[in-house]
Length: 421
Ligand code: AMP
Ligand code: GLY
Image (cartoon, rainbow, N blue to C red; front, side, top):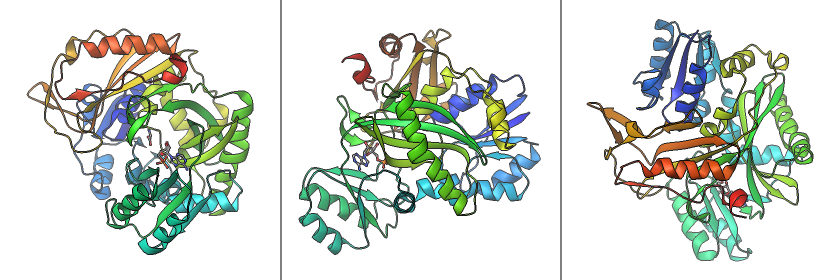
């Protein structure tokens, strides 16, 4: 089969890698890809907003199946667009993708279907929001409604923080924002819970724990994710049943009630308190860096899983996992998630000796004259799978030590809740 993977991050590099292990694959294209995907796939430079150009390329290159990595093309309806052209594509359609594209859409489903989540209020202007905040208890959570690459969420300790947040959101920091959400602050431990759906049925995929804050000890600003480990230390049979019964099943029913069938990965960002799950947010794709953390644990042929989803045949497949612990540390450009410099040469990458249980997935990288340069905030993902989270982390820190990149920084404490307790 000829495959195309859409996206350019660590997630897409890990997807290309896993797909390339399938004996059924003859060729992979990655649109647009990065310096890492280029090693296993052919990178094709097309603007991801240009669906027509993507479609023309897929038809011309006789691509059999397309996997969509990032949220933006999903939310903008790439699946609907390609399916109309009879192209086989893995990912949810535009209506389903509102689960990630609009926090208000998701909150309204939660209300209607009794899905446990933080209490919330929606505001349309700065004055009403401010009035409400003046009589609120803190901490409180302020959110922009639309897509914001994980950065449109403010955990506010006081009125001052909150008014800065609403000024930024209504001021257009995340594009035109007509609405702001004010949410109750949920205390607890976070978990990323993934299911994969074929439109009729779904199966549990994996769990992971992401570290979203930029600094060690889970401090500082929210990022796209500084590292992760899988499986999550919180998951147990009882909790899994509650997540499926109280959160996943009613959500898929809600989508069905809207006249659509959910196809693709569904990622529930959860807060767990006293073994009870609360939905923090939905994403309509794999997580990044959760994907690069999880996929090395997968035993079943990934292409077969995706293909059976597209064919509404997932029920006949058993998804199997290695009984190991995976951990991922993201190496970022200094300054991320705020301003950072691109185009800084990364030395020694090729000299790092990887064992069969070690992986380096590229994110913001590009190749120039045989050398690798940084090209984004999150740049490299180091992943190891082993019999313990601690061994995985120690190994990764040892590997990163061999990297010579003056502009990089990373968190050394990924997994602290399961390692340093
Ligand atoms: P989101 O983009 O909605 O997942 O939010 C990003 C991060 O902000 C989450 O992973 C949580 O760490 C935090 N967060 C969001 N909403 C809440 C909430 N209601 N209570 C506590 N933390 C939250
Ligand atoms: N790691 C968080 C996300 O992918 O949204």
